[in-house]
Image 1: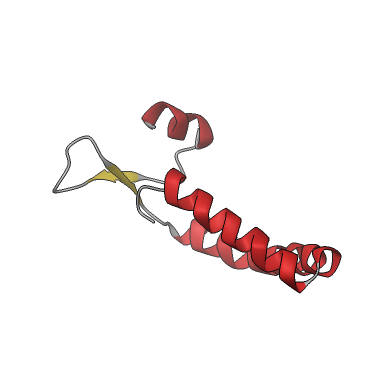
Image 2: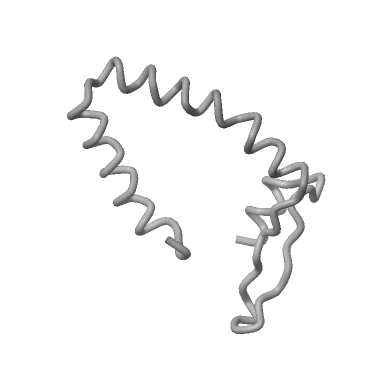
Length: 79
């Protein structure tokens, strides 16, 4: 993951730190810039989710969310 993360963050705007329990693991630290970008992106995320929801309908939107959450279980070790 270190190589992938370095490629994703060439400007090193998301600093990483070690963990006390696993010398191999690295924690990505949220910076002030990161928090600002999350806040700025939130309205866009809501807009996209709304557009998809209107297109798919309530039932299929729930199915999509469940499917994405299920995929997160196998892709996010911290889920």
